[in-house]
Image (cartoon, rainbow, N blue to C red):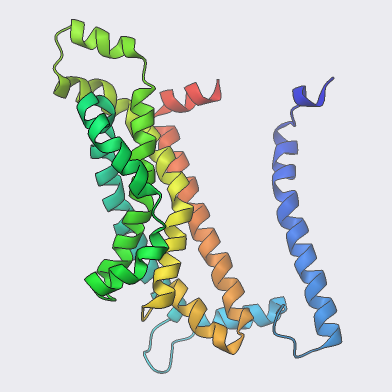
Length: 272
């Protein structure tokens, strides 16, 4: 049998999924042990016990200056900025994406501008945002919106254009107006696709958030990473990076499960 036709079983698939993670952990532990054997004071690859001590200090010990649990405070601040930015992006993208995708005049008017605007590197305009909006929360949330909304808009426009024309023709035959077609034909089919678009935007959204916090913030996961880097505190940086990755993974899984249970017809169609 050709390799292209071979599929792992259920248990085999789970095993294959964890192999890269185990390999990465083993590689790190080996490299850390080698470096610490040569130099017990090495800071580049901290041991598990060093990282555990750092996590205990950051997550479970009150800061003497503020009385806060720093990792919790950083997480809540970053999540608030991330969610605010993504919610705004979702609202803008859904309205504009469906409107432009459905109406030919809007397509001719807006698609070239949206395509050009989406090519602007968001991090390049971060200094402009700080000048215009200041270094507060507005600039950070705006950066997330600018970085994710154009991509989501373009994706939804393409998804609307890919819809079978027969559906819209039948709706018009039955007397549906443009507004009714949008609400009853287009919107129900775009909602699960919006979730796919949002999932693909999570990675960039985290990048923009961490970048903005690293430059101008008083709290947040990105702020903390760039604050402790001057002390070469890899025992703090690595757990923070792992924590950010875990949060992003939880977001992705939550969106996937939401899509599966809220739109079972879409998940079924994708599996075929």
